[in-house]
Length: 281
Figure 1 (cartoon, one colour):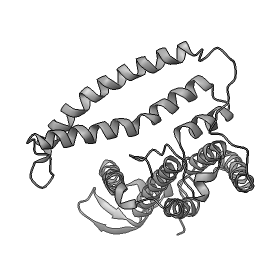
Figure 2: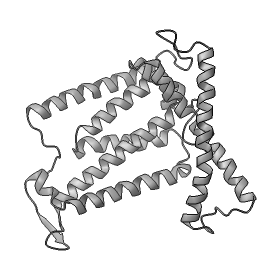
Figure 3: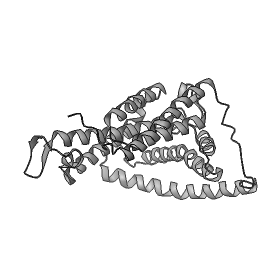
Figure 4: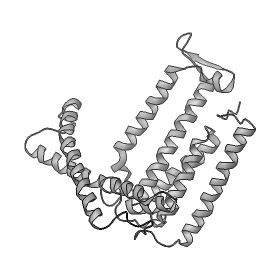
């Protein structure tokens, strides 16, 4: 992460950074489908481990991402808790049996099957988050647009996505500058000195003008693109997209194998009624 808030504007020097945008987008799509299709922990765990390895291979300052990681993990744990509170008998629903571990009340019991399902669900959500995070950290907005275009998405939509991601670092930078200016004028935004409600109010006061300003920028960009004849041609090229390298070819084999497995697994799941969640006992 070399240019700002999560979004890279300049490609990095690691293996994942040097892959073409098309390779990254296609690999991301097949992995997301792979994670969506099952709660089988045997399938999810390898992707979770690969996501961790990919995150560290990017040589990213993980400490700079701690708030995002903590927030996402906390929200997923809350999701699991609410899932349990809504139905504490999911073990019987998915596995047709319940083995009591301990109980709070007659209704709220904890079974081994329930714990296994909730653990599989949590791991699935965290693996999806890791794959998404690695994808965002390894790709630039221009590479993403090029990759989406090469996957058959109209280039006008690709450009909208590119511009949206392109301006996230600018908005974050403006937010930080305004925040520092307000602190210099005596507005307390330090988490150790100001309460959550006060900081939330001040953050809203900063974000509202930024959002309005962003709409003005969108209008300026739209006019500039119209003047340059954007959208007149049927096709377009992207300066950020390079020829496939040897590494791209290797990763292509990987995502093609995953894609074939996705199709076969989904077909087998429909034909042979493979259980949604694998349970070893």
